[in-house]
Length: 254
Image (cartoon, rainbow, N blue to C red; front, side, top):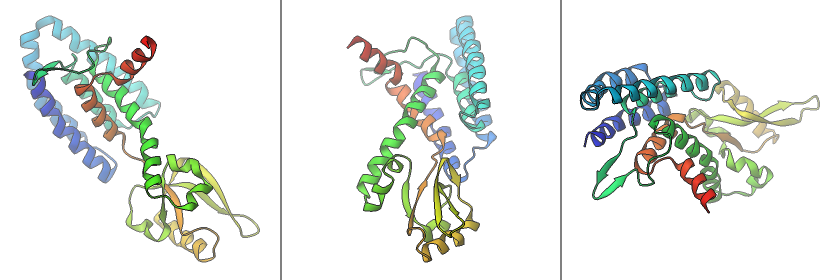
């Protein structure tokens, strides 16, 4: 029962973090401070019922996850808000949450060999992130236009939108750089990491459209916050378990 309460307690914080990350592309430190402070009730309860074995698991989870997440953060794998969220999860869930609901034992796929829950959340989050391009491709198929065939691999990275609508859209990055050569022609270059859209460039792009140098629609990428993937990773870890481990294990076992 306590595990279900911890999960229900955690979800509003993660959902709010997703909301603020989508809106402002940042998550306030206060979210994680409040989550850790109020969630300490569960830590105290678990220590009271679990004793020294629980304390050892708490220290192991906190230290190992902190070091790993810190290294990944320094390498630029994700932002500070994402890192802090995962660290708080490692403290609230030092042991993998196992619970019985409606006659079913969760996680449905069983416990992974490495019982560090925060790692499973991160693994599942990375898997969700990898699947995003597939979702983007399906979206483009539903909104297909012949112009997409000129750069078909862009269909996995972003979508086309009219230059005139860019001022009304936030947190978009351009998939291409537009530069004029010495003959006045526009050279397109693929922006590997996405080129942040500067509102001051809109008149420039509109001028290119008027002169017929570029089309009315250009490729953009939404750059979805990793917090969305973390939240999806948390839900899938709770319900199913370690998806990557299960997929690899199933493949090996045939």
